[in-house]
Length: 439
Image (tube, rainbow, N blue to C red; front, side, top):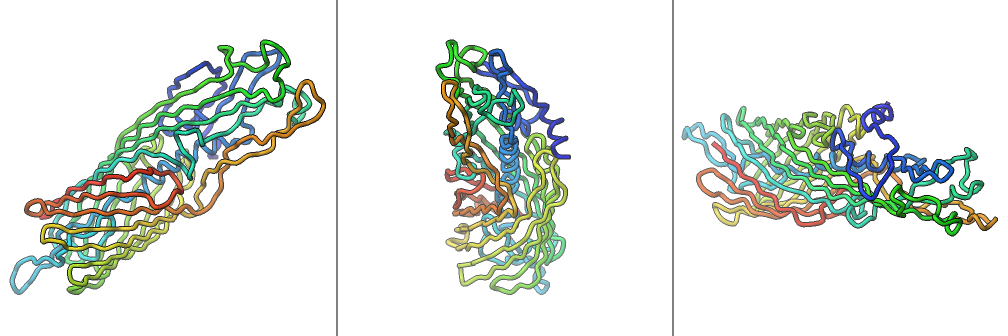
């Protein structure tokens, strides 16, 4: 079923390639698959000079990159939606009293609740400029593969008709940037129960180029002009595609209930439901509903407050373009340190394991060919892209400060960085800013 939908969505047709070509796609989600999944038609040389990817590995690689973008946009920490100021109503005094000197963590939730009838609103801002996917450089040609000649005589080999032994080498360069602003709000329904909402606004900019070069393993020297040339007579060509999209991502609903608390900390349980509100054809959403149940614990030793979150996220439904969304195991740990009545230092480690996730790797496969002037069959190890199904571990570290600017306005400024090279990665340190207000 997915293949049928992809065929309709991608509408891939054979194209003749010049030195450079720009394509107009129906959505950003089709940009890379269209770029990869193509039939290259060269100058007719008395036979159909078509080069193809007979294994569909390139289509899978294009879909994988799409899937990585969507999954990891979804998986990247959005920042804590818990208010920096938490209160409990003192019935004897008839006033709200703060329950913590700390302003809370950067990414972890804490067990304390806002307090009955209290509100917290805010916004997070961050941007990503992706460098690698599964330790393959996106901009330096590490996404390398080959196209093979169409089996023109239908004998199932590349040696009987010598010119079928030629190859087209290809590598992709992808410049991918995302920017996100997340608006969030929480309300204290009771002294132990909070409801929250987070609405991400996302922009994606993508510039992808496919560099192609003919390798005449079998036909070199056969004649002049040679077999297998691009329409302009050259041995190389570049296909370029650009696209951008912006809009609302997948909206998050949260409910948190405080199970136990004392002067040092507490224990809570929370439920997140991420709705498929983002346009999956523009890579703004997953196309599936994700539900996460997690547990929250924190304590305090004077001004030092360690915390931990642990949970499991399950997805229901799937995207027509990127398939099933993997389930996740989530773990966050860290601590806060109240350095001043207006300043809290916070550090977190965020660990997400995406279960049974398709990943990409570069490898080689034997290619048999016979030169036109020889009878011996030779072997060449041609590069290919291969996909594997295994767990994907995403680990982020963060250090920063929460600063009480005035009243109950808080500024959060921290630096986030990846601690692994798996998946789709921005290898730079990522600035993360947040503003929130409680009342």
